Length: 399
Image (cartoon, rainbow, N blue to C red; front, side, top):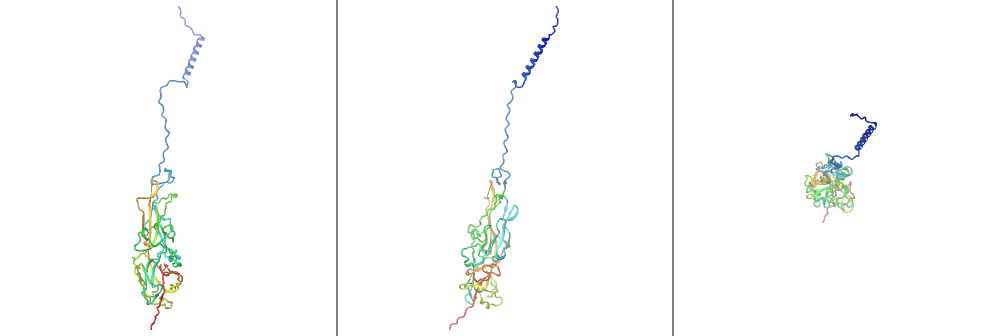
């Protein structure tokens, strides 16, 4: 038996090739995307949280939040350090012109801001020495050889009282203004006993009466300018003091010394004895006698009698009265510092001590008609005096 190899026929080969193609297509279809294929279990991914915005901190408690939005947006305003000295006056000067008749002093108040001294936001402070009030006896005329004439001191003529100036007898009633009758806190730190002539409070118009509590406060912070000073509620004024305990509070003399009296130191505690030896009639004038042709009070009518000039020089020292409070920022609020008491005091202005003034008047003479050169309450040495008429007595013979 013979075995022979069988050669593949063309048809068989074609069928085998077709089967291979079909198998390849099926395999590719099975592996195509989207075909579900069993996979191993995978962990579920964790979602990532969106980060929250960073919170803006508030302004520190010792600052002011300018915008008031509770956030520090670069608008946190700090306290400005400020201080007021014991004598917070930059410069003082004597006011000239007609005002010199009242002996007026004007001073510019100042404070220190951040180490720099600068004016306080007030107008200049002003003050006049007081007008010494005397009363001579007898009045209105002295008579040679009759009685024992005296001169009494009665304090200061008030300019802050209604009805004090009938007929306009006082020189510069408004311009010569000052405040008297200081008591309690209004006189704190001033010499006692003493007689006081006070000027205007800061931001009070000069010459206007003030009847409220002493030391009226003025706020100095300016929120619109981010200015919050560490001192606030400030009040300042000037006070002239006639101190009876001074070495020479007053000196009295007649111009030309017609009565032979030299200048006499006088405290005013006791009446001063006067002596005259000739009349004020210009025809009777001798040597250095100084007689004014008119101004001496008559029993009635105008003051038109010739008179001697009685000079009373008074000595005045200047004080400054000061009040202020300490302020802080707490919890974002600008408030008075509760841990520190307010400052309230008076301090002597050493450069303006013992200043002479000739403001004087006899309060019994309330008529200005006939006066020569406005001597009444005039501070100038050659203008301020009390006109004193002196007449000679007539002998009466009785048979």
